[in-house]
Amino acid sequence: MVWYEWVRHHPRQVAWVTPRSGLVVAGYVYGVCKMRATVCLTFDFDAISLWIGPLGATSPSMISRGEFGPVGVERILKLLDREGIPATFFVPGHTADTYPESVRAIVAAGHEVGHHGYLHENPVSLASREEERAILERGLAALERVTGTRPVGYRSPAWDNSPHTIGLLLEYGFRYESSLMGHDFLPYWCRVGDVIRPDGPYEFGTSVDLVELPVSWILDDFPHFEYLRVGNRVSPGLSAPSKVEEIWHDEFGFMYREIAGGTFTLTMHPQVIGRGHRMLLLERLIAHFKSHEGVRFTTLATAAEEFRMSSQ
Ligand SMILES: [Zn+2]
Image 1 (tube, rainbow, N blue to C red):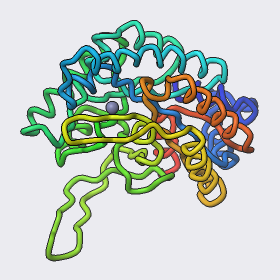
Image 2: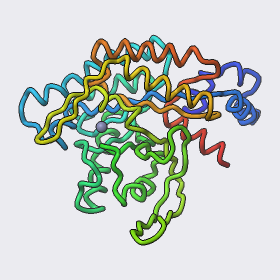
Image 3: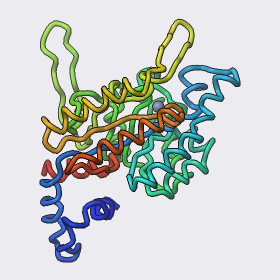
């Protein structure tokens, strides 16, 4: 799958090798060297889970905001198909159970599906490691039931890993996760065993066999666009696309100029980016990325495996 996807997007680099010859690796390394930047479009398909889970909504009106999720997915799939771009969708188990047809359409279009909790539970809010394990298993079961495959990637709801999250992901065989912010454009290895010391330097734990594909609130459509008023919490959102376009252009521009082989991971939500004027923004962004030489689009799973290979 990984090779297939890479070869599909870099036919020239591997035209002279075959898997049987063993020269694919040489072709791959050659291709990686030629790449200037990677763009990973990621979509968190929270749908209704976000509203009835962490936000505790019971009103049909609030819940209907999540119902817009599958409408956004349909528009996004059409755009990605037109542009020939593979993407990653993080799907809570509740979304897979509620909208199995939308999730199957994502898989049928060749995109990656990753784990995103069951009812969009923030791991930090859970009482114990065992409760986090139970939710991890519930989400896995739902995704396997609907997609027929086991996800290799995880993104924690609210990007808030608990002290148990990395250990559990290793235990369940995940290959990468995408919730931390220790870099902006370069993948790195996750750690376990960090020690927080208020009276001395921070103690970094041990690197483990799990790739981090870092994220950023700057590169997330939700805080920019989504108006939210829950209890005392107000998130104004509703930015003009032109403002967000300026921020995202310059983040990409800096990476393209300064970070050789950088990975630009953009996080979007179908219920947010799927609105008409924001879909036009996404269209313009894709055209902007494509106008740069040496830029290609991959799933996070592919980016994680490439990082593994380059680290060996
Ligand atoms: Zn989410």
